[in-house]
Image (cartoon, rainbow, N blue to C red; front, side):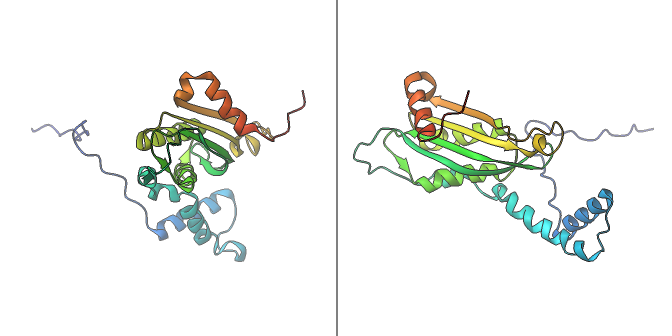
Length: 214
């Protein structure tokens, strides 16, 4: 008797097929299932169009999967008249979703880099933040992804990213602690090795903001 063959396991060299993306109809059916599981009736008037609305909202919430951050940064400019000081874009609105509970992460990002001969359009920095944030995320990984991609493509002398955000997974559920902000940072190159440069960046980020009461 021939023994049954074991399922083939993917190896380091064999390609792993990506999961099939469900159709819009399948996505809407899944929303109807969740509505039933929550205890409501998806056939009542107020919920009839909810599955379609949720599917459209998810297309917007998670549009970052269709964006290539490296491509966004690929076009840079060398005509800078030798500018080599810090470039800072602060208070970039950030909207993401927690990958553990799929609830919003709302905050702001501050991004800086030290040019090494080339600069990039400032809107591209904001779009890189958006491309990574419009995915299921944890804040630590999001911070690193933004900094790493800028470093990889522009090859500047240094990159600094700070994110301040509130997580609804802990403000609207679980421990229910509203008003709490999580702060993460990623410092690369000269921002990591030069403490005075790091302080200058943080001073620019906090310039004009009120000092918290003790």
